[in-house]
Length: 135
Image (cartoon, rainbow, N blue to C red; front, side, top):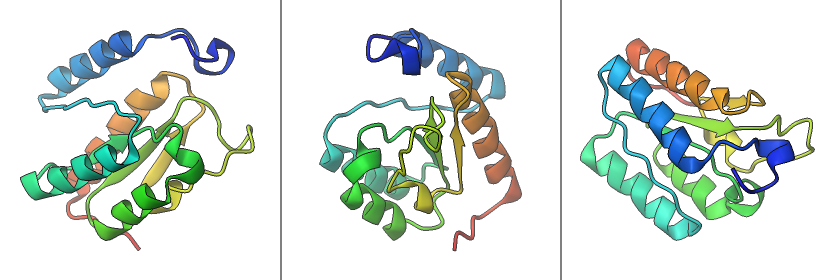
């Protein structure tokens, strides 16, 4: 809610967390929310999620969009683990080409905070289809 509100709006991380946890409760699923500015930490979390049998990943790679090649390689390594990428703004319109997007089942971008809810819905649909066959 503080960084470039003209792009990202004024919703705080806490308010977004509340929104997403309420949506998870409504759908009867568990949601684990994490934040980091450390790419290696994000990578460790993803590998751990796969090992623990987590069903899928919703992620806004934020600053990792620009140079997160190690994160992209991690996502390549866990093919079959559903990943939906989220961006509050339309990255295409802003000339941003996220390096991680190519590893996602799909990208939801440009709908503000609603991008998170749309991505949640997309993940639920992906999981309902059964095992992923990314390629």
